[in-house]
Image (cartoon, rainbow, N blue to C red; front, side, top):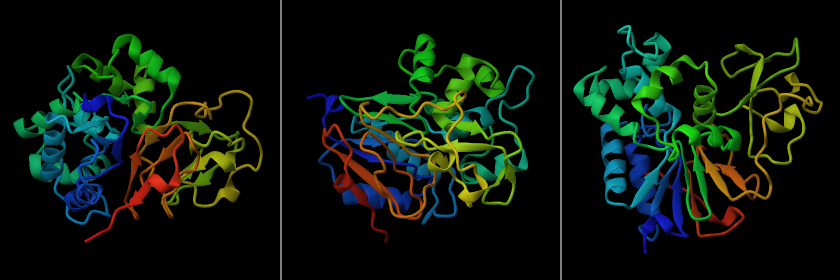
Length: 303
C-alpha cells in the first residue's frame, strides 16, 4: 500500500535544528507509521538541546526521499529561501537586518550566506508544499485558511511555490503573497481603534494573533494568542467585519505548529490543534480518527 495513502501518521511539529529532540522523538515513536513534519526544521532557539541544522535537515530529507515521511514548509524555511535569494536589483529578497540574521544564526553558522551549500538547502525548501491533505488528515504550518489555499491552488495546484513567485511573496503586496504569508505565519486581527497590548518583550501591539483552531471562540480574549495580560484586550465579541475565519467544527482534522504554545500540550478542539509546545515537546499519533483526541497526543522524553 502506498504509504502516502496511509490512515496512520506520526505528526511531528517544529524541530528548530534540535537534532537531539528529533532523534528522541523518532526513537520514542518507533517506525509503525510514516512521519508527517509540520515545518520549521532550522534556526535553533533557546530550547535546543543540541543545535545542528545540517544533521536535522539531512535526516528529514532522507526520510522523505525514502518515502517514510512527508513535510510542509514552515515560515523559517520560507524566510531562509528569501534571505539567500537575490532580487533583480542584487539585494536579498529578505532583508539581512540584525534581527533577521540573528534569527537565522545557527543555519548561517553551518552553511554561510548565499553559499552553494546554503543554496542547496534553499532549493530543497522550495520543494516543500505549503500544505498537505492526506487521506483524512490535513497538515499546515501555521494556518488552514481555505480561502487562501483555494487562491494559491489556482496558480500552484500542488501547493509548491516556484522561483518566479519569490519576489512577489517578499513584497507582500498581492493577494497571492498575503495568502502564502497567512499559511506560514498565521492570521492576525487589528484591535479596535486605540486598543493596544504589550507583547512578551514589552512592545505595544495593535494586531493580535488569532487561535484559528478554536472554533467556538467569539471574543478577543477567547481567541487571542501570545498575549501576556489578557486584561489588556477588550472583553467583548469580535466585530462583524474583518474577522479571521475560524476552522469549521465539522472540518477534517488538521494539525499545525508554529505558535510556541505554553503549558501542558493539549487538544483544544476535536477538529484542529496546535502541536508546537517548545518547553514540552510532543507529537500526535493519528490513526484515522475523525476527531482528534488527547490520548493520541504524546509527550517526548528528554535525555
